[in-house]
Length: 428
Image 1 (cartoon, rainbow, N blue to C red):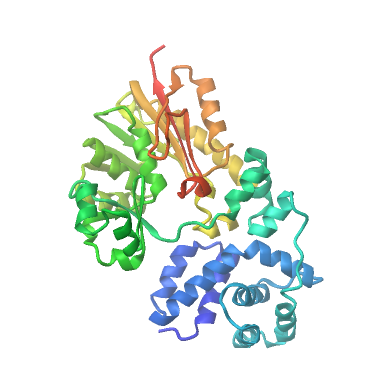
Image 2 (cartoon, one colour):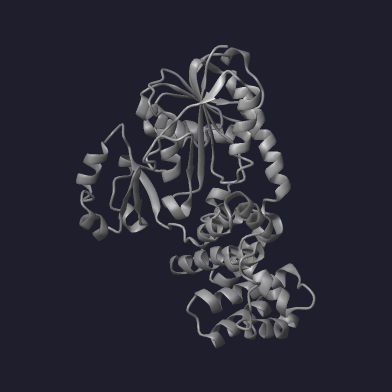
């Protein structure tokens, strides 16, 4: 077992900052070798530094004439988070960080680190009412803040970035084993008071629960699935009862499994990578639904699927900006150029998918991003070149009325950011 929890956290951060590693994967691997008592500390410090990284870069820029090397900057950022968010006395945070510096063999920078931490409180933010202010205040990349302000306006973007995402796990009942009503009654979740006592909250599509509460529940009675993902499936199926469905970008399989469960139909579910196809198979087996898992490139046309499916789902690869609140490392791996390239891939998948839809069938396009160039613009571009498709009005569990497009936002719906468009195919 690792005893040096600060060194563990430093190594994790360097893997993200230096190697563009996936935070959740690296954290899970590291926690397997940590003492149980150290796990909450490592998790909070690791994700905390990631979430505050842009702000800490700004602070360092004010303090240092020259940008410090990545290793030293990472140590200082850990110290900043100890000072800002970990309820550690200032002297202890400084002492702890300087000791870490020495443990890492970087004792020569101890004086610089000490000085950087002692001046942490001497910071003034940029002028408000600018994208730069939003970037520093809420620790989001400047290019993304500028893009969001362009798409939604300053005040909307400010409210979006200020929102603290839900930290509890979202689950839904395993509908092939137990109804939602039975689930609530069985586990004492059938009233607001009982849910509060169990630290649970009902949503339009399931429940937010703590790990402590989930430990009391039979794991075969529920699936972990984001509220936005579940809501998307009900939007796909709104007002129809298809007999066949194809999910072109299905891994790990949550949406495909829910479609098969709710509609009671077989589903062909695909992914480009073989190991992700295996994830779909495992998910389907556990759920007990009929799913044919297929390795497939969603941009390449398969003649045998032409005009074959009543429901075709394209939950396409995207920037993931809608889930950045809970997965902050996403922000380290994206740039404006990525958005442009992703939009091209998304459009290619949509064009290919449209050829698999039967006349009268439904083509569904969805993303876990809120960037309009990946959402509205892709759909508009597709419809402009495909007159035999038209937007269908749909309703989400989070919608009071039918809408042309479903858009979910964290600060409004308490979900991940999500987008769904549904188009009907008609013969010309």
